[in-house]
Image 1 (tube, helix red, strand yellow):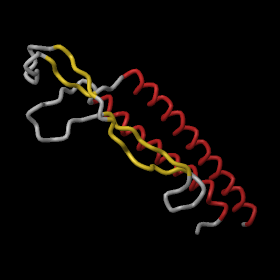
Image 2 (cartoon, one colour):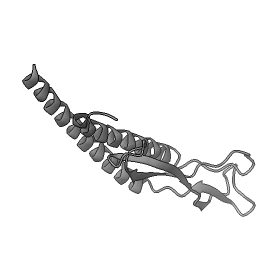
Image 3 (cartoon, helix red, strand yellow):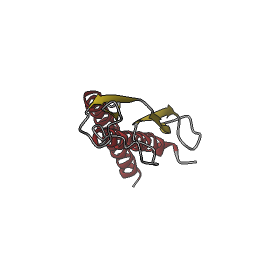
Image 4 (cartoon, one colour):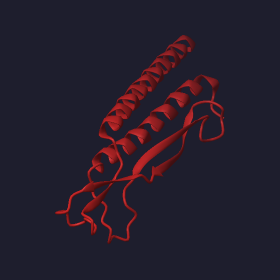
Length: 136
């Protein structure tokens, strides 16, 4: 178990990690928003990734936040594109149902949360340095 004065750094760093994972998922969603699903491919088609965050540290401590999982939302939309090589017999192509506007809003929230955790970590670091300088 870490000393009590470092717990604020651990909490902030868990938030930084969680928001980085969230931003990675958002970036993948935006990058694959307009990628058609190949019906002949045996690979799993890309679908929107949702990061699930939970209170508490990954080590079981009640402080901080951890990534509880990353789920794929298996929702697809059909677009009428009869010229597309992946079109079915009716001329429809399947795409992952990803709204870029929602993804951009989520990215903005993740970035702001990351910045808030970074500011808290910097404040904790400054307080620890001040306490150490008093002891020296």
